[in-house]
Length: 198
Image 1: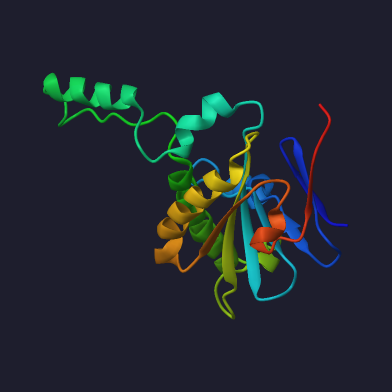
Image 2: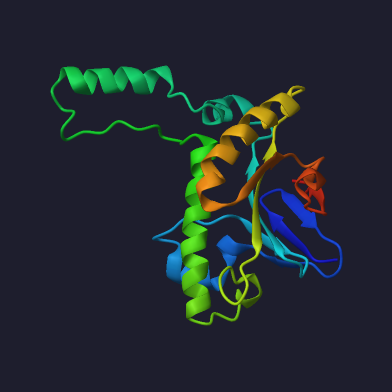
């Protein structure tokens, strides 16, 4: 069974699937890491669809990650912006969240991965050859945010995030999904996800 490990999670796919831990590939580490961000996992089963998986393992760290799940800026950021404006520093100082909204982060990683894989294909990188995204035939792309979140209302959270993700990814013609380790199949991602023992 092909498998890949990201952090504490191992993804096991049926035979015939091709996988790449993209942000660990030589191409990404040697050429792109200091310039572009990348999704965690590239996967396909030889068909016309490719899945790009971004893993956010928040289990046990929900309070620290809760601000990332809202598009609204935290109160502290709003306060800091007001102070910067009152001090007349707005033309030269920008206040931003330390950790971006998770949907914005996924969109940025999609955009950067699209650019990097286009260059990898143009230059004939053999490590990522089975993940070409342009000519001769562009695959259908599905971006999957796999979010581990230890709470009862994951379904409601996932529905809200998926709606925002779909809106963010629409200009790219890409479908977005938000799943957890129990339901990756909801995105058509046929794999088992298990947590490794520490």
